Length: 438
Image (cartoon, rainbow, N blue to C red):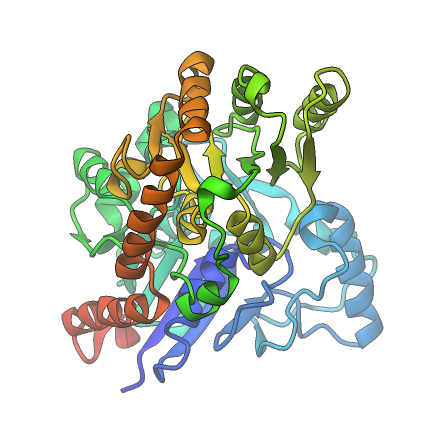
């Protein structure tokens, strides 16, 4: 019997795309329910996308509707890219032809998903998801992230009442538990979610313990990176023969939001400006932060630092930048595995990462990287100085980290582990399973 998986997540997420790609050729029937209107990531393959409006006819009405929908959502998330691309698509239910469209567009207004302040557009919310589950009858529902996908599935399951619901695997991304557990409303919602799931997965051993503390009853799956790993053969071609000690670039993660602390990172670099004369500093992923833009301008014009902002770049281009970098600096108050940190380790850049991420599970502090506090500019600055002044440290760390990457992030090895991951779940499901139940 062909196994059917329904993924619930962010359609434009590279992490979701890479994870799904690793199981796209297993002969399973894969489906995807997006939690918001957005373009499908270009890497996504082997999965059927489900949308609530795609069977509208005539075509000009569909074009008018999608045009209006674009006005309701962030241009940065939708842009001019196609919503579904070349992937097969199905509508969850054919929409009636409504003139004017405002009555239907009102269904895209946000509605709460539970105790917290997290909301979802009604057309991508739990009622529509529940209807899809009844139609599709998947063997497994896999929610990829807690605060939107997981909360959505939780509410959809509650709508089923006492009726059987398919097996549910919830994956914790980034700060889903580590950060949001601090807020009482989220704490309640996360606790209910953990008590409701059949399977739980994450990419940090730290988060396994936190999930158990917060009420996890279901089975915890093997810890795996959510990124799907790296194509090491391609990375080898991108890696430079120049040792890290000869490189004169520093890569800085530019997030400044609920968790990111790019401004702290920049202040720490300023404290080291006396030894950065030969260095170029590149700040990336700062597209949505005016504060970071302004601070970079100040550092360049008033402090004479060679610093610039890197516009959104492809994965391959980012790897090339890391291949030229001596140091990677990531400062945040919460994270799981920082994908940027793994990319830096793969390309030989010395990682300096806040201890609020799971960096201690990936490198030895003081040997193959530095684990730093998120709010102490003096300590962060001292670690930057150490990495700049100690050539042997960064060269030795590059060798150690490459070995770690080959052992733990090789896409070919992770693919086998991911397939075994789902096989283990399917072995737990009775042949009739959720097909008849849903």
